[in-house]
Structure formats: structure tokens, C-alpha cells
Amino acid sequence: MTGGASSSCGACKFLRRKCTTECVFTPYFCYSQGAQHFSAVHKVFGASNVSKLLMKIPMQNRSEAAISISYEALARMQDPIYGCVAQILALQQQVSQISLP
Image 1: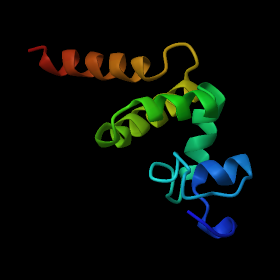
Image 2: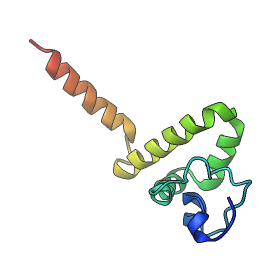
Image 3: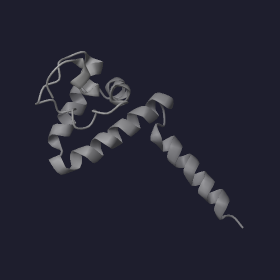
Image 4: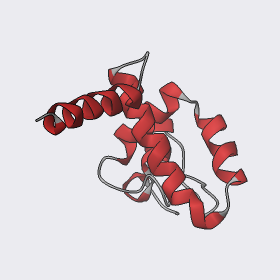
């Protein structure tokens, strides 16, 4: 990514830096809510940690990893203790209630 603020990915917008072609976050946070989602990722995991993690993951799996990291970070912002586990437990409880005769 090159250019001004309008062409920056959500991560670079949040970090207030110029987005370059080498930016590891561009493919995963370049959408309308990218800056908001990256804000949660940065607060929960840290930009440097996520960058290192994404670089260690094979290219074909990075998109799914970024989605999972973003989902977990957003869940942790809502529930700092359980994160997405709270949502999983709630869904399991709903399924068990539906399954009862």
C-alpha cells in the first residue's frame, strides 16, 4: 500500500503511520472497520506480537489467522476474562436447551 491516509490499511491508520507495500497488516485490515478491529487487536495482543505471529504462519493460512485474532480481540474487549469462550458456552447452553424434549 502506498499513498496518503485514504489508502492506508486499518492498522496503519490506527498506528498513524504511512502504509507501505511491505505492511504485513494490509491484506487483513483493509476494510471499512479495519481500524476499529485493529484497535482491539492492538490493545489485547499488541501490534508487534501480531505482526510476528502472522509472519510465522504460512501465507495461505494468514487470512484465517487474522480473522481469528480479530474475533478473539473483539470478544476480549467485551469480556476480558472469557473472551470468545463466553460466546461458545452461551451457544452450547442454547443448543442443550433446544435438544431437551
